[in-house]
Image (cartoon, rainbow over all chains, first blue to last red; front, side):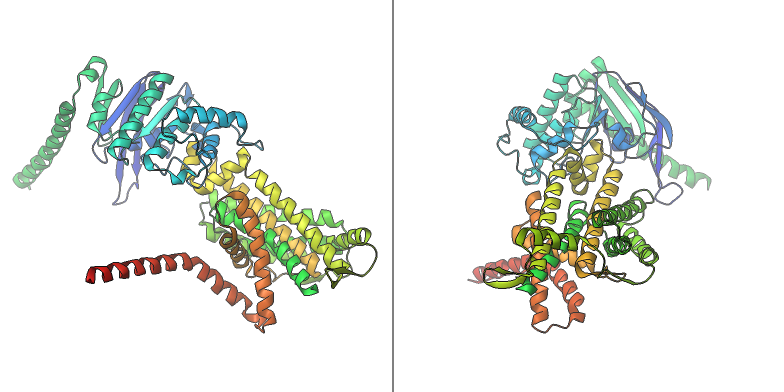
Amino acid sequence: MLEAQSLAKTFNPQTPNEVKALNGVDLSITEGSWVVVVGTNGSGKSSLLNAIAGTFFVDTGEIHLDGQDLTRRAEHQRAKLIGRVFQNPFSGTAANMSIEENFALAARRGMSRGLTWALHAEFRESLRERVQRLNLGLEDRLSNTIGSLSGGQRQALTMLMATWVRPKLLLLDEHTAALDPKSADQVIRLTEDIVSRDKLTTLMVTHSMQQAASLGDRLVMMHRGQIIHDLRGAEKRRVRVDDLLARFEEVRRREQLDETAAEMLRQAYI
Amino acid sequence: MTLLIGVLSLGLILSFLALGVLISFRILRFADITAEGSLPLGAAIAAVLLARGVEPTLATTAAFCGGLVAGSITGVLHTKFKIHGLLAGILVMTALYSVNLDIMGRSNIPLISAVTLASYAEWAGAAILGGGLSLNLFGWEVSTRDVSVFASVLIAISVAGLILYFFFRTNLGTAMRATGDNDQMIRALGVNADYMIVLGLALSNGLIGLAGALLAQYQGFADVQMGIGMVVLGLASVIIGEALVGSGSLGLSIAGAFMGSVLFRLLVAIALRWGLDPNDLKLITAVFVFLALVAPNFLNWLGKRSVLGEENRIGAR
């Protein structure tokens, strides 16, 4: 389904702020698989998602999705295949527009938008029905502006918007990080429902070890723009939060060792 | 009464400008000052064509198209060449000054003898209201010409407002509004945000060009300087409209834009009557917009202060 080959991206090259966000990432995801990505801050996990979504073009490497070469395609052209939920609940919705208008926008993801009415009775009906299933009590407030809702409600609606038209790939970028624990829990349960019901191919970045251990069927750990662990099948199912923390600790210690070792060498030889 | 009708007509004509400013500043959230060039551009195109005896509707349509082109150039400069929006507008506005002079061939074209949309309105008015030169309206003696021009402009702006309202409820229009609201979201939903900005600016400046063409036909001349201060004028109208009816919904915003435009004209007329020096008009307008922009923050601050003061007093007790 998704084939990403040797992706590399350097931000601000040849300046003091140079950052190697992606440093040769190979990732292939089979149809219907749910891949969870974890990593320390600056490990490149969000950059990986953004590279696939087309927020920026990669310096080298290729991205194929559903048999199509996306490498040089603009963000809005990729949207036909990709549904996204952002970390910030404000990013995924147009705050000053009504709930139904936001959904009307989402319902035409990747389609042409002409001079036909954005809203009509039939659409309102199916929207009411689907929103009702969220149990957020929003089905009678569909003409209210979405900005009047809480972050959790907005994120739940964004989740529904991103999957209204079935995406070939669903990208979730720490989509519960900005929510309070209760809302985060709700959104995660909704995510599980939708992903399993529609059998969506999903790539999810998370900072929560709890989510990483319990969700998905494959776990990828990133560090310094590279994939350092890739756990699948039984190995993924066995993983506990403690194991993940231990692996992070290991990464941290190796890093420290590198630095102290370098320092020792410097003192000994220079 | 004659003065009042004149003021109202002028206000309605300038509400095309207010609608244009509403699209760029409020809906796209793009500080577009191309208007200062596209308004005289519309006037210039219409005036030159009318002076040569071209059909007034055709001349006015050409003015609208001129505005469309001007707006899309600003849009392309901003989106394709990554020039800051304000600077893109300044570039096009500056270039248009020369273009307008080239179109007109001189700095002022009188339209006294030309057949214009105003003459059409006059003829229609004469046919409907009877041939009299003046007419009794609620006990006031007013000229048939003024009334018919006013009525025609009112119809025109209502139709334009309705079309705009319906446009912004289509899939395309909704996507355009969302582009101003949250461009990250709209790109993720597969909309080419750049295209929306170009299209929106074209539409905005098309309406402003139309305002220029109508203004020239109403006042009987086109002048290369007539664009100065137009952005602030349009903004003032939009802000007054928001104060009157709020900005809660699309329909209210559009209705507010032309109510604001008319009210602003009235206020200006009253101020001039009181003996305001016409030279100070733009200064006053700018100060007014400044006050309208800072007032909400100031009131907020005042509110907080009084609440804090209240708490302090309670604390002291």
